[in-house]
Image 1 (cartoon, one colour):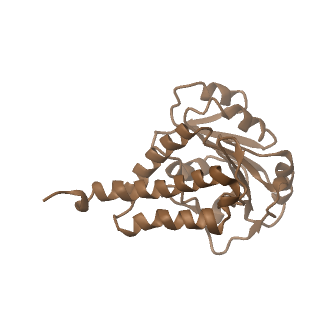
Image 2 (tube, helix red, strand yellow; image 1 turned 180 degrees about the vertical axis):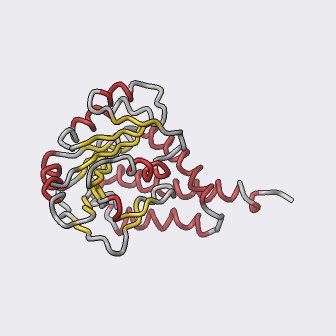
Length: 250
């Protein structure tokens, strides 16, 4: 019988980690890769697992995911972040699918922003590879890139329903979101060579999310979160420009 190993990468996640770990107690193994947290993260994790491994802080999780996946003993990796939850209905599906011939299970993600479920504007169904065989993907270090699926991998995409959804409590407040935008835009700007098209990207994303993906249905809240995504890419472009040759006076 195939086994499932949950992998969580943590850094000062004490406020949210306990609920996450409770939702994955059914897994055969839980591996926590912690980046030397300063809060009670490790103590909370110790209530659920003795597989706690320390890794240097790198600012974002993508460079750690490949290392984390190498630490498991199970047949499948269940990839989950500390602010995500696996409801019972999804857990039941994943346990059954672990006994199939599938290599990768794609699940819809139910994103909450400031406590509100965003069921449009490009935040739903927001598919993610929630479970996979380690040799079926390639881990990439680029920010928010996710996983590169091998051409030969068998993929099952769960129906976009709430019972199949991974729950993601993303950005509990405006201040938290702004802080994250500033940090991640620093990283993105460092990864990208400046082009004026970066400025245009934000406005294209606004049109995609607010109009094509019906963000307008959420009223002022929808307008605000779509503007935030536009602003994010403007920050990336601005930082890339000012840190490069284009931002240097002669």
